[in-house]
Amino acid sequence: MSPVSTPRLQGRTAIVTGSGRNIGRAIAELFAAEGANVVVNGSSSREMVDAVVSAIRQRGGNAVGIMADVGNPEEVRRLVAEAETAFGPVDIAVNNVGRRLKMRFEDITVENWRDTLNTNLNSVFYLAHLVLPGMREREWGRVINISGYDGFTGHFSQRAANVTAKAGMHGLSKAIAREFGKHNVTCNTVVPGAIQTERDMSQYSHVDVERVLAMLATPGPGESLDVAEACLYLAGDSGKFVTGQAIHVNGGEYMF
Image (cartoon, rainbow, N blue to C red; front, side, top):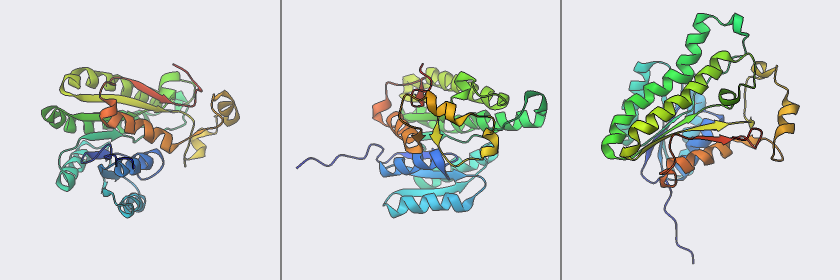
């Protein structure tokens, strides 16, 4: 009879932003299945957030749903405070929120630019800035930033603001990794490629999907769970010697 293994994130508390659906939901559900207390976050659909919380609880996991716009530093402060009230100090922060607007460079307004960088990049700073001091004090922590491969390859046109934000995200990951690593706190970027998700296809009308699929080294596109599994590896003790890295989950479409 094989011994019963301890869940890999037993007793840890994790915030997963943008976890009402797709990749964020997969991360939240997998972390909960591995014993973490999970804060499910969204900003627009309470119904979707509640659905994820319900699914986790039905499987015996611990989760709460907290609505907050992570592009607003005061709402992020409330998010962290409510997470700590529910479960105690935050051990794992996953920055998953992102918006990808298809827009020609000359059509981007200052407001478009600011909004995209605020949602995709500043939000990472807001959450990390609040949870990192406690992680350092407790000598354990994980920050995982979900990027996108266009931030590394630049292969999609009409995405200037998003490409800039996602490239900046990994720069911030490296800075955090360097400064907090000696305190057993890691920070990494997970970079999804061609992943099957629900999305607004009007923002991808310029993408040749068949060409993308033809470039994969794998038989087909990935799933949200593939990204979640990479995050689980980084979130547990298994990832203690990995920091400042970009983990590409792209089926070999691009190889680094």
